[in-house]
Amino acid sequence: MSAQESNVVTLPVEDASRCEVAALWDALREEADAALHRDPALARAMSSAVLMHVSFGHALSHRLAIKLADHDVDRDELLALIYGAYTDKPGLLGAAAADLAAVKDRDPSNTEVLTPFLYFKGFSALQGYRVAHWLWTTGRRHLARHIQSRISEVFAIDIHPAAVMGRGIMLDHGGGLVIGETAVVEDEVSILQNVTLGGTGKETGDRHPKIRRGVLIGAGAKVLGNIEVGIGAKVGAGSVVVSPVAPYTSVVGIPARPVGRPHKALPGVTMDQALPEPEYMI
Image 1: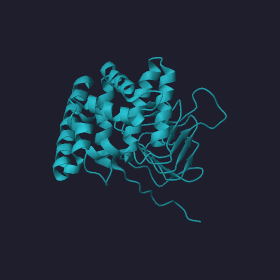
Image 2: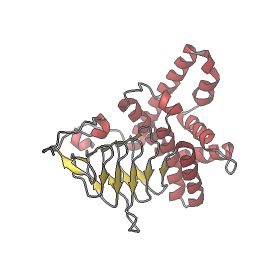
Image 3: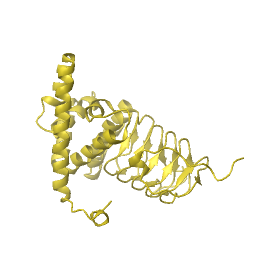
Image 4: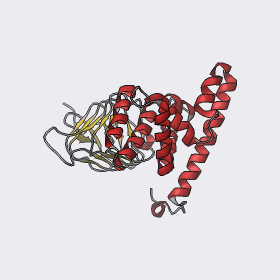
């Protein structure tokens, strides 16, 4: 919702992101310290992942570098590269903080920011993508492809570095997720596992879906072609979407068809996966 829509005065993006990151970092450190005191066996893990670092950017850079390093690009090289991305484009950290807060708010199995920061591959893959996208847009495309390949190998999530991803995104579980080169995923979207945002195999150029704000895409759904899934839409699990989806509409089936009446909420935020009863039964 924009400032005009909500009638709330908001901080400039840079200041808002800085405050968001600072608050997230304080919460992350508090949770790591509490975890250490509950179980001293986690002392080294909490120190290495969170407590030894001076900022969220340092901690996240270190975490991603450990996960994505290999024989070709080692941990120290990746650490410098990732922290360089955050220095050059601080908004990447604001996006990461928004993604982490989204997981805390939307995942009923999780009530903190520490667990997704440490263990959730959807969050880690998304932050790796953000670095790869930065590389892609600055002309370092082979290195961007290397990061994409490592994300796929480590997390089983394949996001093309040219795709455009917003803020406050949750990739729940994430395994088997594929997002194509010209796909767009806007803010506050939630996507479950085994989803494909792909082409039809017949087109070149701009050929992938455009997922608007607040959309929820259920597990196993396939959205194919240069089509728009409108703001607040809901795609049922296992559906195959090959036609545009109107805003605030639920679709289900193969091929996907609208069911029920339009709703008003943003299911990508509420995580309401229920679908209305169909208008007829056979």
